[in-house]
Image (cartoon, rainbow, N blue to C red; front, side):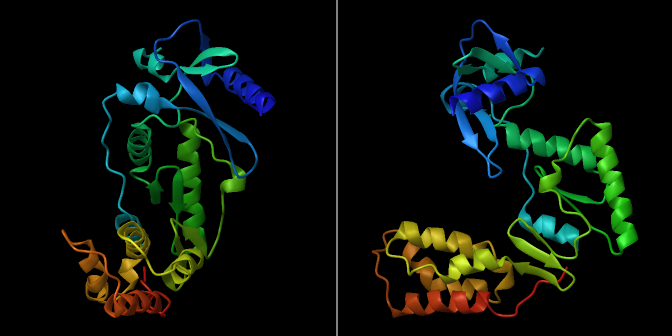
Length: 258
């Protein structure tokens, strides 16, 4: 791992993403993260340094419903210091794990793409079109805008000219928007909760697809009873029936058209 970290630090320095410094009062330990493609991402553990001092920027991330509806030399540098076996480095760009990073990135990307036919959720961009020509025209505009602003995309993570795609846990195709089969399978295979924590986890996963379930609040009512104040945990036949009903409804042919 040390050799891999060494190589990644060298790459970041050569790309002017980080710069060495001799001293910092804000040095954070590094957290090497191995990605799916076996490459390494170096993050700073900023919860022990910068995130305790910075004022978190609050720019709202778009709600999933809004995204799906659409388809139808800076002084702050010192706070990004990381402590490595090669010494101290500061980031010349916004690094991962800074608490405000997602909000800042979302704001920048929305402003960058605001006049283009593209859905933006952090670094996930979705370009659509009613026809193949319209889609390719829209794609050209988005790629040109990225190029004009010095942004690049990673080809292995891109999918082009698809008639079916998975986006934020949903499958989009010519027939509409559907829950992801993998996510539905996780709900289907979930055992009955044995405590409040497990029930809350199940409800969180189920509610992610609540728009597909008719009369959702009525179906879930027996389960939410157990979350009331001063309610003693007791899983009865009423809760079990509601639990089973949730699974049945989510695997029905209900489709949200877009």
